[in-house]
Length: 167
Image 1 (tube, rainbow, N blue to C red):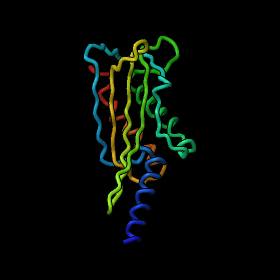
Image 2: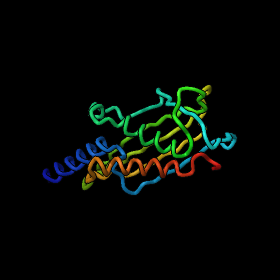
Image 3: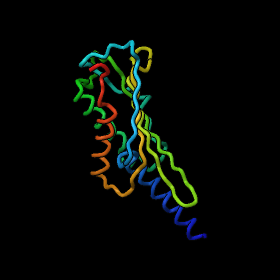
Image 4: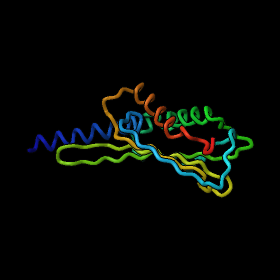
């Protein structure tokens, strides 16, 4: 029984480590959802910049070494650019923020880690949310870094597939 508990803790630790190392980068069973303000007329092209206080990663000291912020920012910046939304410091129409959360569920016989990426498009003055979306999946610890990067790019692409609304 003690060995089983140890194995369960080891699986939980490995799943959590994989979640932190990949934090949504190595996911299967991707679920996404979006909502937006129907009063906002999203143009086909626009300038945006990061809303720095809204960039949130899990508060785990191991993340500093993993560089998840830049990985996420590159994927989001690239996908928004494909949709006509360019990052800029001038004539900014939108602010963009993200939050990454990882939760681990441990049961006697299994542990799973779920990574959730939330993406927000905000109005600069009021910080009113004009568009929000999430991508959530169980983390797959068997993936290598290249596969995790590829899957994150795919998750962001799926999340933004109908952005901007009305396009």
